[in-house]
Image 1: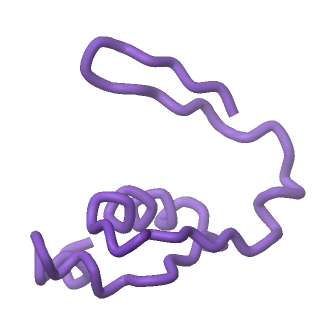
Image 2 (image 1 turned 135 degrees about the vertical axis):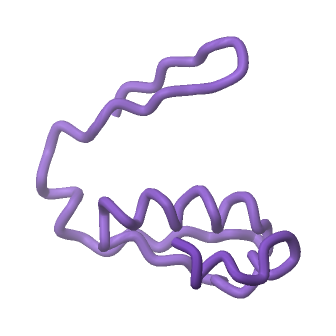
Length: 68
């Protein structure tokens, strides 16, 4: 993937291989709701992304899973 860093954001441009998309990707959230929320959005496009702790989002957005 290609990452473009801007002043207050970054852009990730897609993968070049479908092989990566066929394997499970386990994301360690380290109990950080920001990591969980970020990769939850990515998982809407890449369903092979799995989070090790989905519950940590309740710290800042208890209804997150119902809203996405």
